[in-house]
Length: 129
Length: 435
Ligand code: SF4
Image (cartoon, rainbow over all chains, first blue to last red; front, top):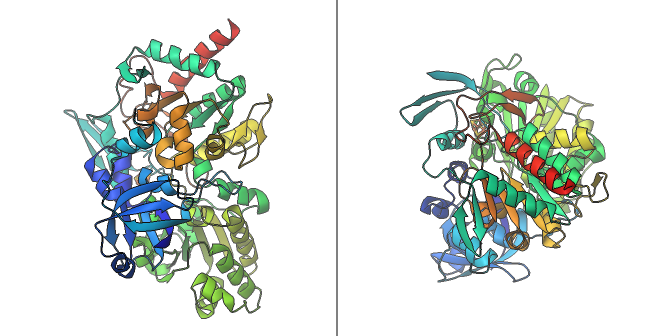
């Protein structure tokens, strides 16, 4: 499914990040989550986890899925965090700021493991160091 | 002992009424929100970074402060084009030393604004801003608009301290004297608490603002704007009428405006709309700045070097060109060869291409708790917590400077503050350069 990705704060994302708990299970359960409406969730086959892929197809991240009434069909939300930023458009339109809001992404069901923030850094960014 | 009127160093709200009691290795915090409280707990937390570390042959090891500073200085002196990311969770005084280091080494200096309200600042440069302090808005505004910002979750006390609930001089009944409107593609908790929620389609802020502008000028917007924005023209007209009938409208914009498609142009048209609205009633606009002292960097970089963020000292004098000298872009284009990241978890907050390159190049990170940036760093320097363990200055969301005093000391005999750590590093850099 094609969707527009919105990212932003949630209060518990803020509480865990500011409290220095980015490597906790709670942080992963709060932030590695893709919110979508019931209609989109059903059309994907009600998966527990989804793979979100950047528009250019170069980056994919597995996150848990969550049904919400707060977004419309075709729009998904991931709390601002390393999971969301893996697939955020890096182009800044000559402003310096990437598209944290409204990046086009692909969302598909997946069985891949949801990585922790530390695993993303080690595996994805540091090449398995 | 109970300490009163402590400043919270977490978001741009810079709440100045925090009460703290340190007792038996525990900290009791009153008045702070969930986010603020969590950071105050860092003073006594078990995961606090207490020792400098370096990465050698892929292995991380503890070293002395002197060794860590030596290695950091070596990395920066040997770099052709270092990036100084001077994060917002520290004082202007520390950021100032960082800026001077960037100038001295001919590097780049940037801060959280670049991945936050950078486009807002650019919009202000385009068209100027009808601004006000948070206190003005609190005392006068009877209509509050949160556009592209979920205040309840990004600056949790904004609504209760400045925006919606407090009793102001002209708004004596607090919430009852104010109308609250939220413009957001999501039904956020802030939207739920509003009197009117415009649930616009993502990336249609510019179109919605243009239509409101057209209505304000007494014209009819093109009917296609309904489909583009998802908002009926009748609701747009109602919103403009509500604004015109108010005594004072205060608009707070968030990343929903500055980060969506259109970026600084969204802000520019919002600012022009506000100017026009002042022909009918009083109206001001301001950014809800989520990061603590992000406004401070813009202020001091502007008065020291003339530009608010994304400065390049490569030619020996400051240059500014967002998109070319800004953090995400220089990392994506592999245009720097070392980085100093202070009081900001940059690896966590930038897109994959930029984060990956940042993890590849030599990086020094100054922070208080383990996070993706410290994991990827080659040198980690423990941070001192501003407003808790040392004094200094922050700028609040409305660009009001706030001097803060600590209630305890730096846990490190080697440094009093991040400013102190940076000064020690700068001294080593100068000694190496001049040798
Ligand atoms: S609103 Fe911001 S400044 Fe105020 S207590 Fe919460 S985090 Fe701290």
